[in-house]
Amino acid sequence: MSQTRLLSVLVENKPGVLHRVASMIRRRGFNIDSLSVGPTEDDSVSRMTIAVHVGKQQAEQATKQLSKLVDVITIDDITGLRNVAHELLLIRIHAPAGQRREILDLIEIFRGRVVDVAPNTLIVEVTGSTEKIDNFIELVQPYGIKEAARSGAVALVRGDEARIRLVDFEIGIGVEAPERPAAPPQGEAADTTGTV
Image 1 (cartoon, rainbow, N blue to C red):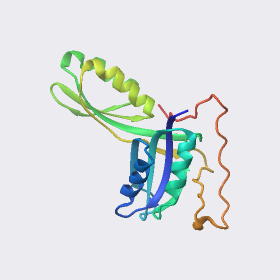
Image 2 (spheres, rainbow, N blue to C red):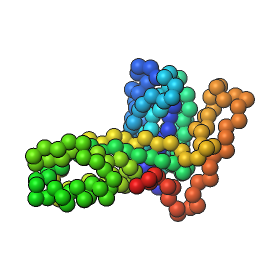
Image 3 (cartoon, rainbow, N blue to C red):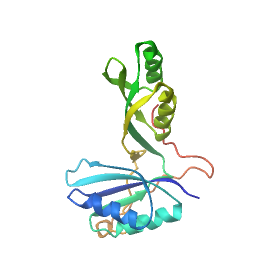
């Protein structure tokens, strides 16, 4: 069964790495739902969070292929793990004076914030799970969305022992990878909501 899977990839922070990773996924025929890249606490390393809509077997195949790329340091499919995955939405909403209070109430419910005000529009920032962002967009749709920009998910595994395991890299020889937290029982979804 196909679902959106989150791959967390640590890569060397140098030119061309994003292109190589995206090209490998494209060659496999997988569609990237979202891709977020940013530096980590180490300036020489970047974290990629890739959301792909594939089955578990295809995700394992993609993980194995990505691990072969020279620039990839570690990779893990964190879909079944307890994780915090958030997106950022910036959205310009049609908000004439007569409807503005209703819109502001919705923004407050979703713990968003107004980042720009114009005579007939508001730019709003909302962060949270993909579902939270989708729900907010659905609820403000009737007011009129002028434009929207949405980041991809950024994600980290929850808990003190949450470290991305090394996947068959020489770096990890002789180093025990920490135990992975148990996946939720069959039929239960992993907690990806964070704080709402």
